[in-house]
Length: 184
Image (cartoon, rainbow, N blue to C red; front, side):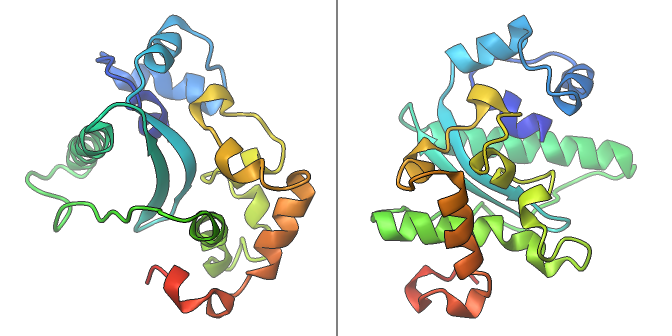
């Protein structure tokens, strides 16, 4: 999750592994975090990290920001993975997949789909709002990620976080999503 936060800006973070403990303790007020926020190229709107994939909704602040962010994210994670597993070379098969969100209803359903991903995990089914590697907790009122996530484009469409949680719960099964909103 550290990379999702720190790579939003144009700041080169030396020894990024040293900031992991700050992120784990939700201490996001040091100078490096302030620099990242001040130089952001993208805003993280929604995310879910799973064991073998991840989903993000990003809002581009600077032209080309999403491509640079995704390149930095892929490169950084590949380097980390290769060091941990004593290997070399590519980790991902191809370029990241992206879909332009061009209508509001799609945005709402896509955020629900992303937040429901942990439902597939036996230990998290029915407790998706507690899954620690997702932005769902932020949508439910927990501000642990502070300004590093901006759920307002979605959450402001609801009376309160509870209404959003009910919307997500109503779309609990992926089969309930309209065909045009399904990702896989």
